[in-house]
Picture 1 (tube, rainbow, N blue to C red):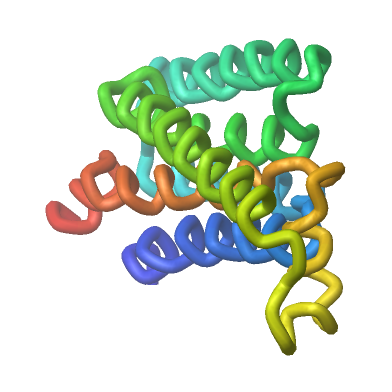
Picture 2: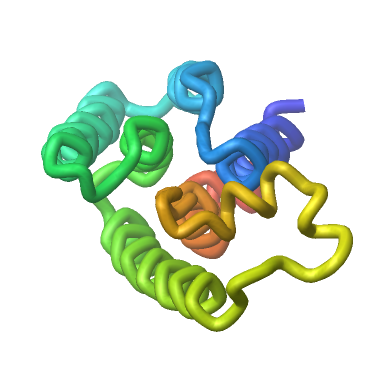
Length: 171
């Protein structure tokens, strides 16, 4: 049962965050809260050593502080900041966290370039997309970039190499 939860909970919540950001340009606070709560449940259920748990909490706090600065500067949305911090809890201070942050930056840059290019090259959306509120919002040059997509892609790419999958394979 625990193995199934490790394999399902994190990916489902992260994918939901991406879909929500794509469709609404917001990531509900409950997603970040559920990610953080699920981390604590999994850490306790897998008997994570207290010192390691502390390092995971410190990693999440550090990412939250940095992301809050980016939010204050207007470079990142609040939902993006919170979900990135909740994801950092799962990776702790590890190589996985560094890879996650690097991939997030890369995918965020790629997403930004693609969206800005599409907005510039396509003054009007084709056919059915013109009737879709989420597509209109995504295409609007006054709208932001749904970085939650980049954050989720990076997290889902790194997660299979994390300690959680190692725990499942040993458990």
